[in-house]
Image 1: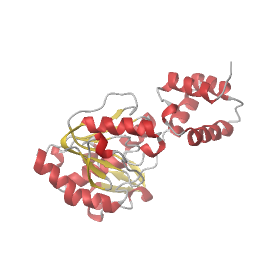
Image 2: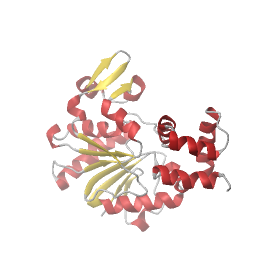
Image 3: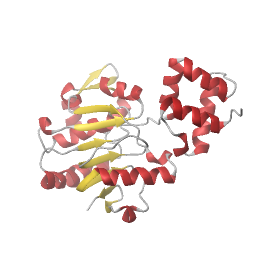
Length: 258
């Protein structure tokens, strides 16, 4: 049997449900080869054996290949547009109880940012964010809600003062914000999507996907939105065929389902 990258992809799919065919191969193979070299393991077959028998190695692998770079209010100008235009329009259209999904939410910076952004417009008890990620380790970190100073640098001063407590050099987000988010494991490429969403936020994740996988996910997001709902994507992304899918572009990063 040939223990090449194709073998690894097949075994990873069976072990984790993560389809590496949907990620850019050169980039992902380089990341995995670096990880294997770090442990001084020789060959994909030995590494797969390790993934099957060593829980710590398995958890490290899943955490490593799912990209977790996140921060609160990333690209503040886009969040300002959300605050001043997108959220008020959605509330006018759908009322105060918006159905919001933060997909590939990483360590929670994004769904917690959404709660704070919405709190300027509606009472906290009207807010519920569905937050999902493939990696249960980052979901566990999100539930703790403790962040480095760099992560919270862009949080508006009034919200930072109101909803964070400094713990040493870190910042802990308040329980009243945490209680508005429901976290769940979810694989964008194979699991069932939420329906009738008013707002979906998925930023700076699909850049790691192949064009085919991106197209699949964007079409699924379109189907997940209620008519009039909005998809908010990252500053490094664009939906080239948004018209073909059915979206209207509100601006570079906000796409609406008519």
